[in-house]
Image (cartoon, rainbow, N blue to C red):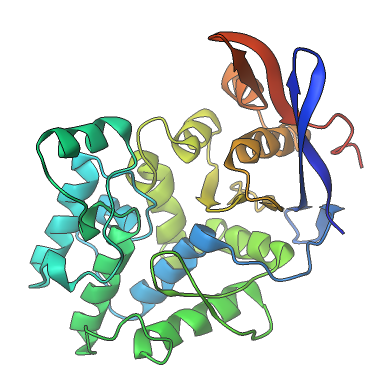
Length: 319
């Protein structure tokens, strides 16, 4: 069963508790720490994006740059740099924004969203945080002469290739697919196998598709996430870290030596994710300086002043 992982302390009073599960793997792939339900499949949400990108590379997607590869598995925030990369990717393959089948949305970056609304614009599919992945999937379809109007369907050749690639990288037994927030099929994966997949990508041969994905996000964390986003902050603070956040409290990552982690918060609480990740990284001896220390104890505010902390529960990592 899941356990209490993160607490919110306000004015010395424990106000909230977030339960969940996490696993840490040693470089040899064996489990170092196992807390909660780490062998039960979850929906990794955007943590599956790096593996989806590997599938696209294996099936003819040729990015024009490492930044374009990063946008192909980004959870971007709709900033101008992100939109330019998505538009460029579409244009190179003779595609238009209306080929995208992700839901219309507004940018999640506050400044970018304000600019859109101030100019009287409306929600667009390209603003949706998964539009880069959808654009890359369409480009892969063009490269293979596969249908572009049905690329969301589980039976589409591209989605079958994605399922096969994720099964190979994770070793996860076949399970029933779900539908992700962007409309694409989502493959369930257990936390332990999600961590193993991230380790496999970061330790792959330098010229491999797997390593290309891990290197792209580490070279362009702002493309794969966005200004002030957690993954950008973490990868900027921790040398060599490859990590990806997923919706509803999922996070996974790996270090260059193959040490890897994956976590899931039962309530999907986004605020608890990074303090838990920072605590895990601290537990395995990562040097992230003051940045990692601050992330492990995020402030609780009262009247604009710090009156408490969001932190991993003391002792939860002392196993």
